[in-house]
Amino acid sequence: MPTFIAIGYGDREGYDRTAQSARDAAHAHDAALQAGGALMGIAGPPVQVRNHGARQVETRPGPYLASELPVAGFSVIEAATLEQAIQIASHTPCAVAYGVVEVWPLKGT
Image 1 (cartoon, rainbow, N blue to C red):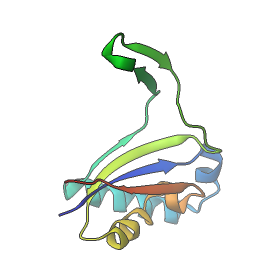
Image 2 (image 1 turned 90 degrees about the horizontal axis):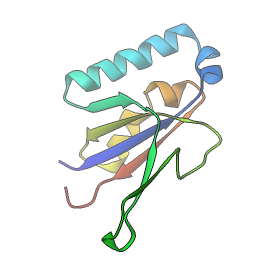
Image 3 (image 1 turned 120 degrees about the vertical axis):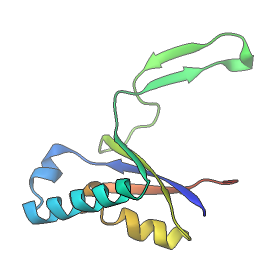
Image 4 (image 1 turned 30 degrees about the vertical axis):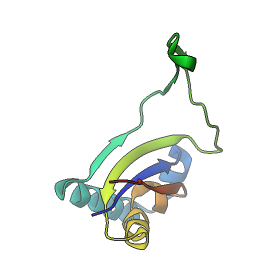
């Protein structure tokens, strides 16, 4: 089955202004995904890694990409199609709490 990476972006303000019932349903949805084998987690602080020319590993704290909302979490999900992966991602906390979720198909899986 195809594999997809979902990246959730959201902040506390959007989360707090979302109805408690919608948040509870989104968290229950995530719990069901995890129970079904989806790998999910809350994002920690990122580290940039470079090893240009395989000569020397260099690291730098912080994200490489910038967005108007912080990265809140990641998931690895399996779905038959991109459309199904989008449907799954549309019920996660970031999607319902005024954030956004990117769904990336992984090639070759």
